Figure 1 (cartoon, rainbow, N blue to C red):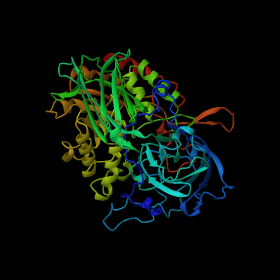
Figure 2 (cartoon, helix red, strand yellow):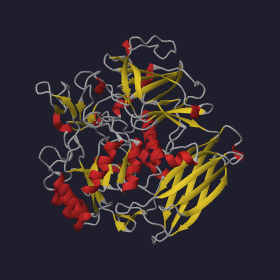
Figure 3 (cartoon, one colour):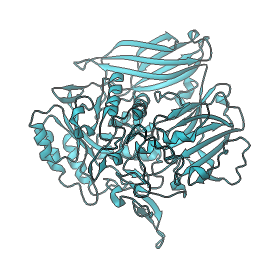
Figure 4 (cartoon, rainbow, N blue to C red):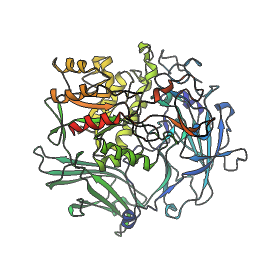
Length: 629
């Protein structure tokens, strides 16, 4: 396989040499490692990398991936981090339009006809910044002699990967993990990893979210080793009886091995919060295993008030019985269902006191820390916020575990927003993507699949969301079909069906709207409504706003089928800089970086400032959300 820069222009080419998406379980080399939460099977590659910036593909150092390449002209950059926050390129904030509008005429491939392939649109662009990353590393002792893979948790927006001069693969989805098998090329010492990151590709049409436009390796990069017997994928399926008295458990495992897999075995143990064993099974190893624990008796239910989690432990043993891999998994028993057009969790009507949350840090942009995430959870809990929508992309992996442990209901959104392709002055979808264009189907279905496969084990996820503000069409319908075929225990959400009611019965299981007036909600619910109603965005807390929240909260008592919503949004997107005159740290918004075109301070509509100081509007949130906990 040889890399081709033309892949940047092709919507059908979005993953090459990339491993299939799988559950986000963490692996350990022994029970002791698991208890210490320190794995010898994982090696971080975060830190300082060699780096060169080019304004376009033509000026990039083409052969920088070669082992003996002279990188004397390279500087350094911190990984994870955004290229723009490191002083390269330019900082731009924009909401609904594509970032090149008004400067470059560009249309999505095939959107204006079968022959309109838009070749060279990104690969030959005069402005398409390229980051050339190099990392020289030795393999840690615990990874040597094993199969070795690399995981990029987040890279914006398109990347080519080489190891020791050999091309490994290509990936585009900026917000889900991209993994590659390095085994054929890895050596114990002196490995040269090279990653070429492009700011724009056809993925840009699908990642037109309301945010600052960054690029680079902005989430963790790590190596992981697969021992002789390895858990490739895990799907844990807890069930609760209709009368809410008993639980049952099933698990589906996918294994791989370097030896005769049938010689190994897997022991699965379910324990309660206090370490008491609830169930245990040992099964012979195989590529595909289904384990049915059957009834596990009376269980504590998981919800916002009592996020009770059980611990499932998997021990993978080779033929002699030695543990080669240990995997912990948190399990939450809950019953989510739709009855009489009302959503219920554990027999109680579900009320969503939610927020939309971009990942943000005033110093690091979308490169955020565990401390940031923990602060956000604490803020949610003290202000009666019980739900979060991951607007408009999957978040960092630790966030999902934090929501599990703290009882935060999640709408897990797929990385899709093509706002600029259809909302032009008024709704005008003449060149909307993905729409019903066959060339754009697989890329969005793959994004849905990655979202599902990565996060399927998290009890906090009550909704799968197909994306945001991308109009509607056959391709989004295909995304819904994938989710329903994979998982019928959660609710599928998509707001865009309001623009074409032909899809309302085949795309979204809830009536979801943005910024509907209270009287609009009343009108819907008093006229033979088909579905429960939620506001995926409402209140829009920009400036001195969030007034009128009472008029929405009162509807919760008036209509069972009105089940709350998600405030837009949680945190301001602003960047901390040193003021040129005073020397003090100040917040800068869109338009403050000579970015044109931009949407100026429209990035500041959170109930929390970018430095994580609560705004006065939070008092309204705390009071009104506290009425329906």
